[in-house]
Length: 170
Image 1 (tube, rainbow, N blue to C red):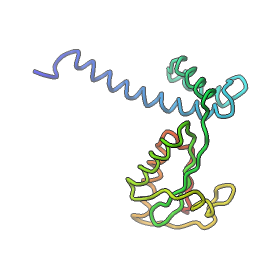
Image 2 (tube, helix red, strand yellow; image 1 turned 120 degrees about the vertical axis):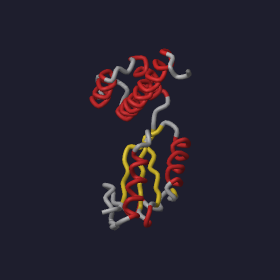
Image 3 (cartoon, rainbow, N blue to C red; image 1 turned 30 degrees about the horizontal axis):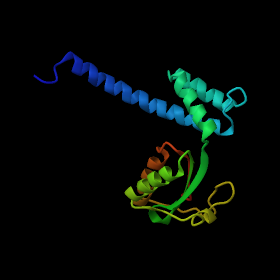
Image 4 (cartoon, rainbow, N blue to C red; image 1 turned 90 degrees about the vertical axis):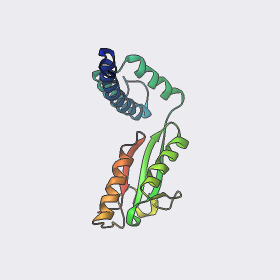
């Protein structure tokens, strides 16, 4: 009788807890990377100090935190803004913080394509927003277009490198 082994049950339980722990560590790591953009010294960077405190509360090992800070100090991250068109021709600005822009653009493009949307070239959407990223020409969507736009924005927000999503939807 397969599946009745004590060790199989332990293995399955461990897989579930490890998956949850991995997701938590991913979110905490992302918070640390975002906070470390303005400096990798926690004594001089209050946001980084808070992110590290949250990571410690989440039982993230100190070695993982140190590795993240070391990587940030060596390589650094950069803020990249991607522009795209959503359902009904809405304008979408996707602001990301990434250490690898080539990977991020490929992942963002795949998300957009899976929803039947596309990325635009730089400057193709930016003109629809002012300096504070408020839409100059807001668009009202209803019904299926609104649902499709919400699904796209939700999936883009769930991407690890995404910092902010701005649309011209009312």
